[in-house]
Image (cartoon, rainbow, N blue to C red; front, side):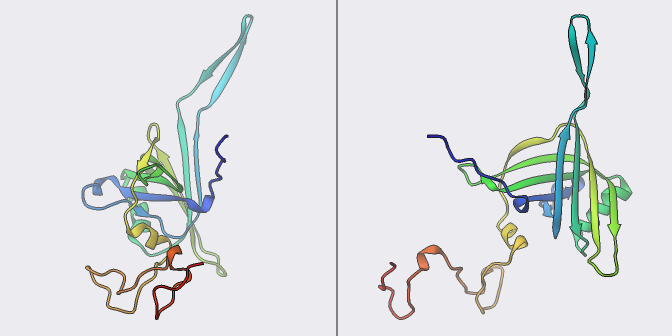
Length: 194
Protein backbone atom coordinates (compact mmCIF):
# COMPACT_ATOMS: atom_id res chain seq x y z
CA UNK A 1 0.00 0.00 0.00
CA UNK A 2 1.45 3.37 -1.03
CA UNK A 3 2.06 6.08 1.52
CA UNK A 4 -0.30 9.00 1.57
CA UNK A 5 1.20 12.05 -0.12
CA UNK A 6 1.40 14.97 2.27
CA UNK A 7 0.79 18.54 1.15
CA UNK A 8 3.22 21.25 2.27
CA UNK A 9 1.62 24.53 3.26
CA UNK A 10 3.22 27.87 2.41
CA UNK A 11 2.59 29.01 5.97
CA UNK A 12 5.07 26.39 7.21
CA UNK A 13 7.87 27.42 4.83
CA UNK A 14 10.06 30.04 6.48
CA UNK A 15 13.24 31.98 5.73
CA UNK A 16 16.05 32.40 8.26
CA UNK A 17 19.12 34.57 7.61
CA UNK A 18 22.51 35.47 9.08
CA UNK A 19 25.30 37.72 7.84
CA UNK A 20 28.13 35.33 6.95
CA UNK A 21 30.58 37.38 9.01
CA UNK A 22 28.54 36.55 12.13
CA UNK A 23 28.64 32.75 11.71
CA UNK A 24 30.81 32.27 14.80
CA UNK A 25 28.81 34.54 17.12
CA UNK A 26 25.10 34.10 16.38
CA UNK A 27 22.57 31.61 15.07
CA UNK A 28 20.44 32.09 11.99
CA UNK A 29 17.46 34.33 12.69
CA UNK A 30 13.88 34.13 11.47
CA UNK A 31 12.83 37.03 9.24
CA UNK A 32 9.91 38.34 11.34
CA UNK A 33 6.35 38.65 9.99
CA UNK A 34 6.89 36.93 6.63
CA UNK A 35 3.94 37.15 4.27
CA UNK A 36 5.43 35.48 1.19
CA UNK A 37 8.47 33.43 0.23
CA UNK A 38 9.37 32.57 -3.36
CA UNK A 39 12.20 30.08 -3.99
CA UNK A 40 12.81 29.47 -7.68
CA UNK A 41 15.88 27.58 -8.91
CA UNK A 42 16.01 27.65 -12.70
CA UNK A 43 18.18 26.87 -15.69
CA UNK A 44 17.60 28.44 -19.09
CA UNK A 45 17.55 26.00 -21.98
CA UNK A 46 17.68 26.42 -25.73
CA UNK A 47 17.43 24.03 -28.64
CA UNK A 48 18.97 24.05 -32.08
CA UNK A 49 17.32 22.16 -34.90
CA UNK A 50 19.75 20.09 -36.93
CA UNK A 51 19.32 17.66 -39.81
CA UNK A 52 19.82 14.83 -37.33
CA UNK A 53 17.36 16.13 -34.73
CA UNK A 54 17.22 18.70 -31.98
CA UNK A 55 20.29 19.50 -29.86
CA UNK A 56 19.68 21.19 -26.53
CA UNK A 57 21.94 23.47 -24.53
CA UNK A 58 21.58 24.67 -20.95
CA UNK A 59 22.89 27.68 -19.07
CA UNK A 60 24.23 27.86 -15.52
CA UNK A 61 21.82 27.38 -12.64
CA UNK A 62 20.30 30.58 -11.28
CA UNK A 63 18.22 30.84 -8.12
CA UNK A 64 15.65 33.53 -7.51
CA UNK A 65 14.81 34.00 -3.84
CA UNK A 66 12.37 36.64 -2.66
CA UNK A 67 10.89 37.23 0.79
CA UNK A 68 8.10 39.67 1.57
CA UNK A 69 7.42 40.71 5.15
CA UNK A 70 5.82 43.37 7.30
CA UNK A 71 8.52 45.93 8.00
CA UNK A 72 9.73 45.85 11.59
CA UNK A 73 12.40 47.05 13.96
CA UNK A 74 14.71 44.07 14.41
CA UNK A 75 18.34 43.09 13.99
CA UNK A 76 17.33 40.82 11.12
CA UNK A 77 15.67 43.58 9.10
CA UNK A 78 18.73 45.79 9.68
CA UNK A 79 21.06 42.95 8.63
CA UNK A 80 19.20 42.72 5.30
CA UNK A 81 19.98 46.41 4.68
CA UNK A 82 23.58 45.78 5.74
CA UNK A 83 23.92 43.06 3.09
CA UNK A 84 22.50 45.37 0.41
CA UNK A 85 24.31 48.61 1.24
CA UNK A 86 27.66 47.14 2.30
CA UNK A 87 27.66 44.24 -0.22
CA UNK A 88 28.01 41.73 2.63
CA UNK A 89 27.44 38.02 2.11
CA UNK A 90 24.39 36.60 3.81
CA UNK A 91 23.38 33.02 4.57
CA UNK A 92 19.77 32.01 3.95
CA UNK A 93 17.87 28.91 5.03
CA UNK A 94 14.46 28.01 3.63
CA UNK A 95 12.99 25.68 6.25
CA UNK A 96 9.99 23.37 5.81
CA UNK A 97 8.54 22.97 9.31
CA UNK A 98 6.24 20.06 8.41
CA UNK A 99 8.92 17.84 6.83
CA UNK A 100 11.14 16.05 9.35
CA UNK A 101 13.53 13.13 9.26
CA UNK A 102 13.65 10.31 11.82
CA UNK A 103 15.94 12.40 14.08
CA UNK A 104 13.37 15.22 14.23
CA UNK A 105 15.41 17.53 12.00
CA UNK A 106 13.73 19.79 9.46
CA UNK A 107 14.19 19.68 5.68
CA UNK A 108 15.86 22.87 4.46
CA UNK A 109 17.66 24.60 1.61
CA UNK A 110 20.89 26.47 2.43
CA UNK A 111 22.18 29.32 0.27
CA UNK A 112 24.73 32.11 0.29
CA UNK A 113 24.55 35.37 -1.59
CA UNK A 114 23.70 39.03 -1.12
CA UNK A 115 20.57 41.12 -0.90
CA UNK A 116 20.25 42.66 -4.36
CA UNK A 117 16.94 44.51 -4.01
CA UNK A 118 14.94 45.75 -1.02
CA UNK A 119 11.66 47.42 -1.94
CA UNK A 120 9.74 49.23 0.81
CA UNK A 121 6.04 50.16 0.47
CA UNK A 122 4.49 52.62 2.91
CA UNK A 123 0.81 53.11 2.11
CA UNK A 124 -0.98 55.40 4.60
CA UNK A 125 -3.72 52.87 5.42
CA UNK A 126 -1.60 49.75 5.73
CA UNK A 127 1.48 48.32 7.43
CA UNK A 128 4.85 49.18 5.97
CA UNK A 129 6.08 46.19 3.95
CA UNK A 130 9.39 45.09 2.45
CA UNK A 131 10.07 42.86 -0.53
CA UNK A 132 13.66 41.57 -0.40
CA UNK A 133 15.34 39.82 -3.33
CA UNK A 134 18.52 37.79 -2.88
CA UNK A 135 21.14 37.04 -5.52
CA UNK A 136 22.32 33.52 -4.71
CA UNK A 137 25.84 32.25 -5.39
CA UNK A 138 26.22 28.82 -6.96
CA UNK A 139 23.93 25.90 -6.26
CA UNK A 140 21.63 25.82 -3.20
CA UNK A 141 22.30 22.86 -0.92
CA UNK A 142 19.64 20.57 0.58
CA UNK A 143 19.85 19.03 3.99
CA UNK A 144 18.37 18.61 7.46
CA UNK A 145 18.77 21.01 10.37
CA UNK A 146 17.79 21.36 13.98
CA UNK A 147 15.75 24.42 14.93
CA UNK A 148 16.65 25.95 18.28
CA UNK A 149 14.13 25.65 21.12
CA UNK A 150 13.19 29.33 20.75
CA UNK A 151 12.11 28.82 17.12
CA UNK A 152 8.56 27.81 18.02
CA UNK A 153 8.26 30.78 20.37
CA UNK A 154 9.32 33.11 17.54
CA UNK A 155 6.34 31.92 15.52
CA UNK A 156 3.74 31.77 18.27
CA UNK A 157 4.09 32.28 21.97
CA UNK A 158 3.93 29.24 24.24
CA UNK A 159 2.07 28.70 27.51
CA UNK A 160 3.63 30.27 30.59
CA UNK A 161 2.68 30.21 34.23
CA UNK A 162 2.42 33.33 36.39
CA UNK A 163 5.75 32.74 38.09
CA UNK A 164 8.88 34.74 37.43
CA UNK A 165 10.54 33.88 34.13
CA UNK A 166 14.28 33.35 34.54
CA UNK A 167 17.19 31.72 32.74
CA UNK A 168 16.58 28.53 34.74
CA UNK A 169 12.75 28.62 34.34
CA UNK A 170 11.61 29.93 30.96
CA UNK A 171 8.01 28.80 31.58
CA UNK A 172 7.22 30.85 34.71
CA UNK A 173 6.38 27.63 36.56
CA UNK A 174 3.84 26.67 33.92
CA UNK A 175 3.35 23.45 31.96
CA UNK A 176 1.78 23.43 28.49
CA UNK A 177 -1.35 21.35 27.84
CA UNK A 178 -0.84 18.07 26.00
CA UNK A 179 -3.14 15.34 24.71
CA UNK A 180 -2.65 13.14 27.79
CA UNK A 181 -4.24 15.88 29.94
CA UNK A 182 -7.72 15.26 28.51
CA UNK A 183 -10.17 14.13 31.15
CA UNK A 184 -7.93 14.85 34.12
CA UNK A 185 -9.28 16.81 37.10
CA UNK A 186 -7.60 18.89 39.76
CA UNK A 187 -8.68 17.07 42.93
CA UNK A 188 -8.01 13.48 41.84
CA UNK A 189 -5.47 12.24 39.35
CA UNK A 190 -7.35 8.94 38.93
CA UNK A 191 -10.29 10.32 36.95
CA UNK A 192 -11.20 8.45 33.79
CA UNK A 193 -9.45 9.66 30.63
CA UNK A 194 -12.19 8.37 28.36
